[in-house]
Figure 1 (cartoon, rainbow, N blue to C red):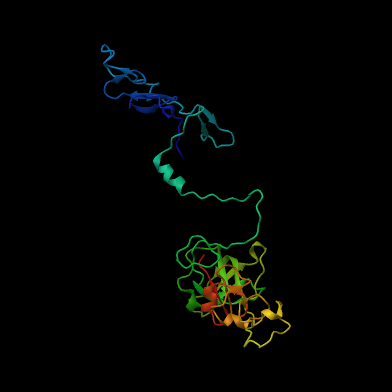
Figure 2: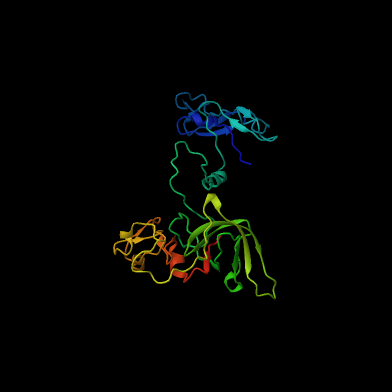
Length: 301
């Protein structure tokens, strides 16, 4: 319901500090400053003392129902709705309240020419927390709730009643971020199954996984135990990198003993990600807050 119109005052026809007011039918009215007259306030009353009434140009009947558009463009618009195409150079003033709405708009690009796709970034909107994960430009709480770690084939995330609290701030469907010692994964919550008031059964989130073609993680992986002094056949990186005392080499098939030292730089992970106790890249919250692979953090929507 935006209201716009073509402005004849856009050309500044009123001179000598006069005030211009748009009228219907692409016309205007000049209210002259003291000492000036004429339709555009260009005549001095001192040069022509016989005309001292003050100059005004009323462009049409202001009370008449008339178009404020030079040309209506109605193709493909509902009845009574149209774009207002103005004469060359004319502006289209809009109400001040509409400008405030426009400032809050967001623009999403779904196609960019010559775009080199090199990195996937997870973000969550509608945030209510100031916690920030390494790969998110928008702050959101990654450790809002603790759930039971699912395996790679499960589409159900169980949350014990003591961890469920007041629930989620919105109804499904919505996205959440699952983060554990095995890594993190985006999931779409399609429904929530609530237990009866007399039951001790957990709440169950029915989710869609493998979003954006990503791998479904096995969150309930086995804890590795104490690191061996030398790598075994599960180590897939160069043997010299294992326990070299220089870098924490993550995602190498086995936890690198160097990762026990937080002051060493982490390799093979994203910026500000950390290497968990099972040798996987994950969020700092999950690495610091979870003691084993039986649980995952479930973010806010």
